[in-house]
Picture 1: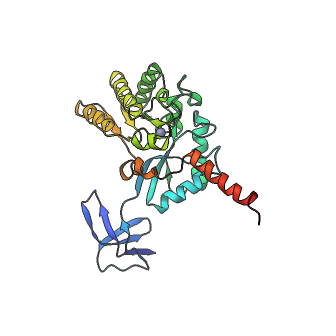
Picture 2: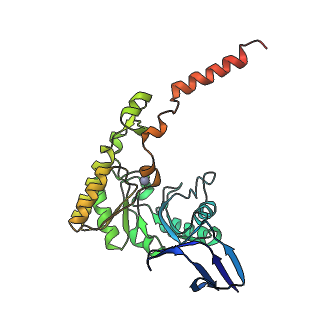
Length: 291
Ligand SMILES: [Zn+2]
């Protein structure tokens, strides 16, 4: 039984192909690429990109604990719909994925319900509390590919150093959520002109940059590799660039909203007081205006 995917734009970075080509699949293997191929069934991919499966190393499937938001099943279906065939879910679930049993739970649920490959990450510290390291060798043995306290940064530099050393020693990558929580102060958006205008508490860029710098310096001290998560400022990129130029083992990621939007996108957003005033107006309309 063969399948011919026709009329798609093929993009394959490995072979340098970026042009319209048809793909013939026989069983689980690619049997041919080009034009004039014949298959038992045909799939019209006009207007679509045909490419190797995409990989997202930072997703949040909220199972266990927040299944109303997302499960491994629904998250994997959404990923597949967008072309992603491998993902790394973050461990900030409830309870967090901070021991071998929890990693095994994710792997079992993935086997039972996911339609793509799931590579679990595990917490770097127990309960994600930033105090005591998890059993990293055990986590790796049951299938974790990385450790992270994503959702928050480890406040203690001492603990971060040890996490980096142990993770690297057992062959796991430490994924760093770089954020100095003490600079947060109830902030809800980028600190600047728009946040001032809206009267909303802002989050200064330094909050991220301070910790990108610190975590990379600790990785250098520990002679460990480090991956910087969801980079959102130009200065963070500069810090990472300098570290790479020095030969440090640093990688990073960003997210679409960081390069497609600015805080201008929420400039028309009604702040709480504004929203409150509006709902009060509606209430007045309903309850006080005689019908
Ligand atoms: Zn994060």
